[in-house]
Length: 185
Image 1 (tube, one colour):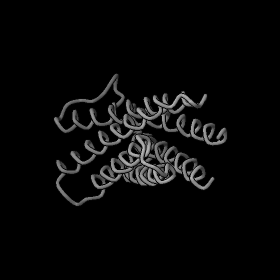
Image 2 (cartoon, helix red, strand yellow; image 1 turned 90 degrees about the vertical axis):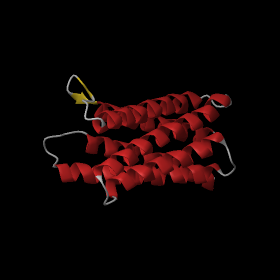
Image 3 (cartoon, helix red, strand yellow; image 1 turned 135 degrees about the vertical axis):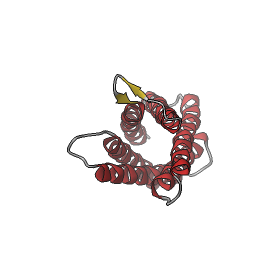
Image 4 (cartoon, one colour; image 1 turned 45 degrees about the vertical axis):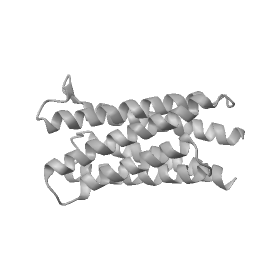
């Protein structure tokens, strides 16, 4: 039961973190740039913590455990890009790499979910992971475009913002799936 609590708690913290980071990536007129940066930072801290808790709750080695560990490492890489006092180029590369590592983690965990047909609620975890992979990938592509000084917008909306909200939706769906899966077991 303790591991189930870790997994559910971790999924909840990760979902809160992705929504927090998505709010931070969105240029709301009522949020200053500093507030948005703080939200992005804390959102990634929460995601890293949540994914680490989920991985710890897995117990034995599995693709899902490795995927959660990779997602946590990706968030830590993004955090480094947000905090390190270094060149803008290195900061951007860390954020891009962190988003790609998170996408890789989601794809790794997805492999485990696709193999497990024992649970009727697995579809939530599959859809959630696909959305998170898509969102992280869009954020990384946006970072690459910005690094190359090119627009990363669709009709004036940043790919980073779109990717952040897609990832947040996926994380919330994954949380719902985790709760349903663990309560059934």
